[in-house]
Amino acid sequence: MNRRSLLQGLSFSMLAAKLPGASSLYGQAEGPQAAPSRRIAANDRVNIGFIGPGSRGQELIRQLLRTPGVEIAAQCDVYEPRFAEVNEMVGKKVPAHRDYRELLQRKDIDAIFIATPPVFHASYAIAAMKSGRPVYCEKTIGFTQEDSQNVVDAVRKTGQVFQVGHQMRYASWIRDSIERVHQGEIGEPTQVYGYWHRSDNWRREAPNPSLEHLMNWRLYRESSGGLLEELGSHHIDIANWVFKERPQTILGASSIAVYHDGRTVGDNVQAVLGYSKGRRMFFSSITDNGLMADQLWIYGTEGSLQITLEDATFYKQTSKTITEASHSDVVQKGVATGASYSADSAMPYRGPGDRLQAKPGEDATLTACKSFVECVRSKQQPFANVEVGFGSAIACSTGRAAVYEERVAKIPQLPA
Ligand SMILES: NC(=O)c1ccc[n+]([C@@H]2O[C@H](COP(=O)([O-])OP(=O)(O)OC[C@H]3O[C@@H](n4cnc5c(N)ncnc54)[C@H](O)[C@@H]3O)[C@@H](O)[C@H]2O)c1
Image (tube, rainbow, N blue to C red; front, side, top):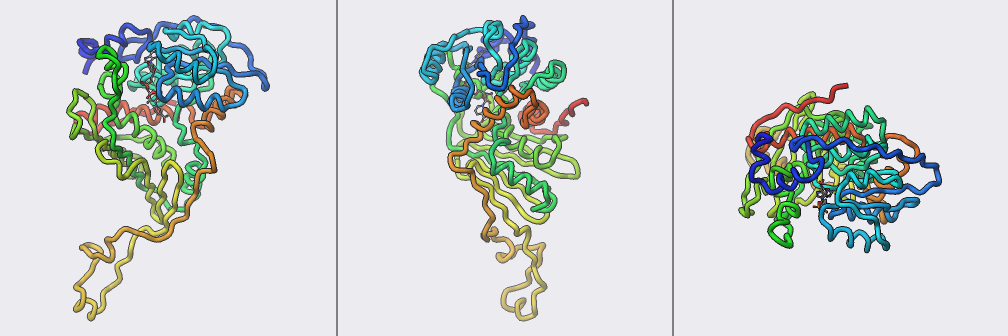
């Protein structure tokens, strides 16, 4: 799909074309006018400018309100009803702007949060960094390959603190269990399987038809990488973390199996990502059956790890050894070899696991927000830094074509 076809007859594209600074697919953002940012002392309040306080944005604001030393100082959205929602959460009238460039012009903003749809992430993040502000940007950091590279370049050039919204990296049970994987607890991890299955059509009620694409941007290819990007990016990031590298290839498939409602992204997706030494990540998302829910399995040569949103469990059984059958066994039960079916060897492992749990009241998004604010004060790059963001974003933007065309695509690597 080329830029011209994207811009023809697509209402989100028309909306995006009217808006400043959508993804490089829509043209680069206009250069921001630099507003000098102030020095933040250890005890100073950090004033946040928030761009895109929709569903995820409001969750981030909720957690920022629980973060000491933070003020929601300005907001920006193209959908005005958001302003009252934010004011109600914050408990006061937060200065509001319809254009992100006005927000960046303010002198009282120390850091920027971006939670718009992904087509705007790269341009807005780059403009914010150029204006002298650290950025917390929701995943994925770029919609196109070029976007993600541009964000990395901007961080390298400006030296700004940049954190991506991969909050799973801030969950204690996930961090601790992956550290144990890195220490060799399940041997060599060779496979990561991510399931994100739901029973939910992913559609939002639009107040009127003109708002369909603004509300349901996730359902249309011009504004969304579908389930691979919206859900799979988190799991791909976990695989990158486990394997300590970014994937080299992606093989994908997708279809509309249930929701024939005009959407152009699939309602299910499967992807296989290739890492060095033959290691693999498999991601599956379906939307008409939530049985598997959101979980990852990390399989190693000496054990397995299951990760969910509240715990992580190590299992030590890797495979079942099939012993040589005695003559009497053969007479009684038939011959069993590892190469053929046997109920004894083919039943799932149901033994005990070693479980790590979330701490009482722990919230990974809150930890991610607190950590970002600390990084803003100390000028340290966060754990979920721009290279982490690049790793999931580049796989997803490359994977889009692979999924739609059901083929393998080579994932570009990050130049040093
Ligand atoms: N980290 C996570 O777990 C997580 C969870 C959900 C969503 N997300 C990400 O957060 C982002 C937002 O998702 P969402 O579900 O909140 O979407 P949403 O549609 O609910 O919210 C997006 C908001 O951005 C506003 N907006 C759109 N274009 C804008 C523009 N040009 N300038 C300013 N505001 C604009 C919309 O009006 C809306 O209020 C996406 O990138 C998504 O992938 C991350």
